[in-house]
Image (tube, rainbow, N blue to C red):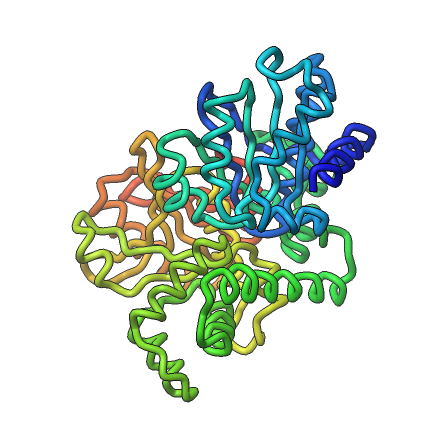
Length: 436
C-alpha cells in the first residue's frame, strides 16, 4: 500500500488540473479546523477542490506541498483494512524535509468512504503542520460524525449543483444583477430557458435530452443504493426505491409520515413509521430531497403539520419522475426552493390564519424575513386574485411591507394596500439572490 500511495501522489504532482467553471462558494480555512465541503454526488466538489489548489499554486505554494487523494480511486481500497496512517508515512517518505518544517495542504476527496477517517484527520491536525480540506456526499459529515468525532475541529460549507449565476458562468455570460440592456435581457432569457431544461448538474449541461435523462437516472440509482441502502444497511431496499419515486413525483407537495407509511403499506411493504422517518432523514443527509416545515413560532406545532418536499434539482425531477403528477408550476417552485436553500437562511412555507398558503417565507442569517410566492403565470385573473390575496394576508400577519411573486416571464409591480409587491421573472429573481 505504501508504494501505491507514493505512485498516486506523484501522479498528481505531474497531472493537469481541470478547474472547470468558477463556483460562487468561498471556503475560508480557519487555523486548527478542517474545511469540509459537502453536497450531493456529482455537484462539482472535486472540481472545486482543484480550483482551491489552483489558487494556492497561483499564490506561490509549491506543488509538492499539496497532497490530494480521491478515495473513490479503486487503488485506495486497501486503506479500508490497513488504516489511514500510511498516508502521511507515504507522503513524508517522498518529502522528508517538509515534516514539521513546511505547511502541507491536504485535500481528501470523499474520505467518508473509509471507516475511521475522523480520528485520522484529528490526529494529523494535532501532530502535523497542515491545512485540511475534505469533501463528502453526505450531510452526516456536517452533523453526527463531525460533532462526535472531530470535537469542534471542523467547519462545513455546502455545495449544490450550479446556480443560475454559475450556469451563466459556464456559458461565458456575465451574471451581474441590476439593470440590463434589451440585448442582454434576451440573452439572459435564452440562458434561463436552457437552465430550465438541463438544470444545474455540471456534467449534463449541453447534452441532449435522452443523455441528460440517462445520467440523472444514474445519479438517482447511486444516491439510492450507495448513499442509502449500502450506507445504512436498509432491509427494505425496494420500499426505499418506491418511496423515493413517490416523493420525486410529488415534488413541491405536502406529505406526512403517516401518509408515506400508508402508501408503502398499500404496496405490500410492512415498514413501520419509525423506519419511514429514518428514510426521510437519510434522503436529506444525501442532499437528495429536502423537507420544508410550516412557519410557526412553536416548533412543536410546526413539526406536527404536514411538510413539503423538494428535490436537489428541478431538471433531475423531470428525468426521474413518472411525469404523471408533475407540472411546470411545481418545477418552478422546486427551482426557487433550491435557490433559496443555497442562500444560507431558513426556508419555511406560510399558512395564513384563514388557511391561505404562501410558498415560502425565509429567515436570513441576519434575521430578516421575506415572503415569496411562486406562480408560473398571473395571466389568468382568478389565479392572480388568489395568489395576491394569500400574499396580502401573509404580509399583514407577519408585518412585512414587501413581497415577491416569481413567475416564468412576467415583470411588474402590483399596487397593494399591504405594501410593495413585485412580480419578477425567474431569471431576474435568481440573479438578485445573494448566494453563500
